[in-house]
Image 1 (cartoon, helix red, strand yellow):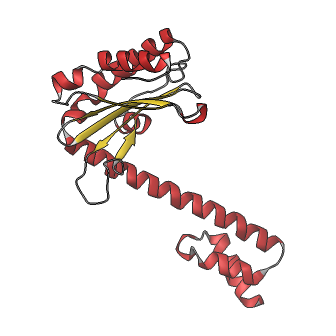
Image 2 (cartoon, helix red, strand yellow):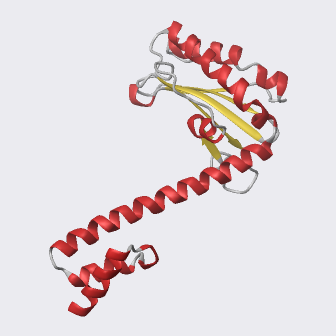
Image 3 (cartoon, one colour):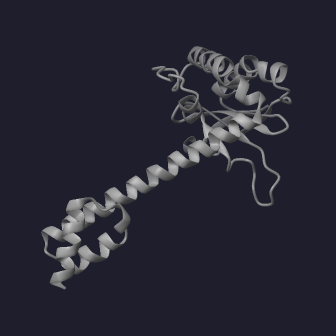
Length: 204
């Protein structure tokens, strides 16, 4: 352990202390430490825990003074490093129906704030996520649920953008473009959009 930043040292010590329950309750191995101090914009310190199937990472980015946590499933598939099936702390809390409104806890800039923040996060993890960390099947279900949420959000974002483009083309009476855009999501057209598409086709 040799992070050049004193906050990094405090972060490591406090994280190991606060998250000791992972080793005691869920058979996680001892933590591994990773850090980078190549420049202020990329400075970070990371504490990583692994059990047989699950990983949990607590990390602190120094420039933003941001404290974050990720958890997920380890994988032995070629080309994968275990980070492809993961959840942010916020996503995990959301899937577990946990309120994460903790103003000030996520951006500690002082040593005393780091201790307070890590204690708060560790307490929430121990109270609400311990069963999942001890049971990879729960995390697997959460990851699949989050994938479905992310896919829905991507689709909604795509549709919103295309509707905006179609509206602009309609206002300019560019009917060929209207047809081309609406044809990209024909199965999702509302009644007004369908009428506009039918009208635009007649104008070409």
